[in-house]
Image (cartoon, rainbow, N blue to C red; front, side):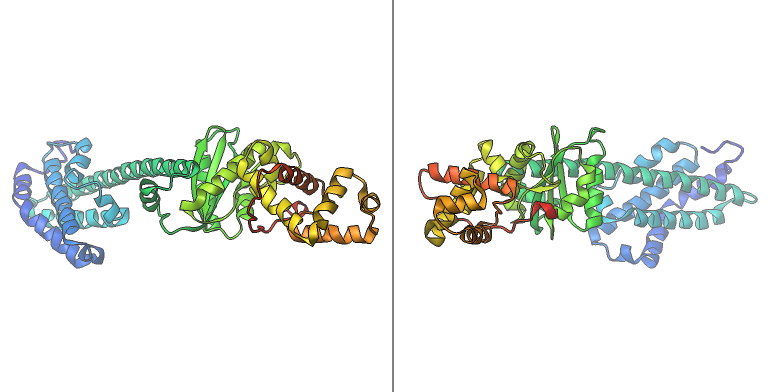
Length: 404
């Protein structure tokens, strides 16, 4: 607040007070002339901006008279405008608005100053402009903080709904509010939270996703991080790039689905895979949930068990008149190798070698790979005890773990 020595005389202050209405009109006219963004605003929002300008001038005059201190500046100027105004005009535009108001006030007020008081008036305007600049920053900081907290709440609710498989109207409206209404090519990534804590990991994942050009929704579930990633071209590659932000342990990637409202399937597969991954200590990081079908089935994941039967047992039993199923069983259950399997089946060794190649082409699993062999062995066991034939599902492309 200005001291009595630095404050203009009472006569000057009265002359400035009497021109409050003219100053407001001049400020609005100046904004109309100088700022295209203001001219393009809807009528209602233009009226709110005009009220802010009028409130700024009124607050200056009261401050100029010494009846208000800095703490009241924010409430005086922005209290009349709705919070939604911070979404309509940016921080830079608001600063333009305040700069225009201050310029008009300075130009007109100096002309009203008493003899020798021009410098005092100019200094008063400059001090007020500093206070109003801090007030603008404070308003937008509070708005950003409130908006960020609300968006984080929406984000957590959407992720929870996806995990529960609740793709209802409320989830869709929340997703749309977050910009996910039309996002396609969605996958769910599950990993462990870092030992350093979770306070920053959500922000870091958002920044990392932005650098990759993908969308992401993140939620912390106990010791797990659940990421829903949209617009992915290669989910495993995306998970590999973001993997450094996760804690130690497996990172499991669910299958890519068309859109967010089908992401429950990807989330269930990724969460199940994350629980089952310790059963495969040599699993790559990240690993696709489809490569953990055997481990997931061991934990009682019924969809994984059904997938094993439909993807492995059914196609083997249907191909080659059953020869492929017979060869796989003899090779795996007997542990006899190529020659022992050939003797058990009364065929040539090359025939066994040929059938193993056919098996790999048919089901995408190489029986000479230890993990693939264990997966197929479990699939055969589940197929033998299956109560009824399981419809065959299309094979998804698999990656060789050695290539990851």
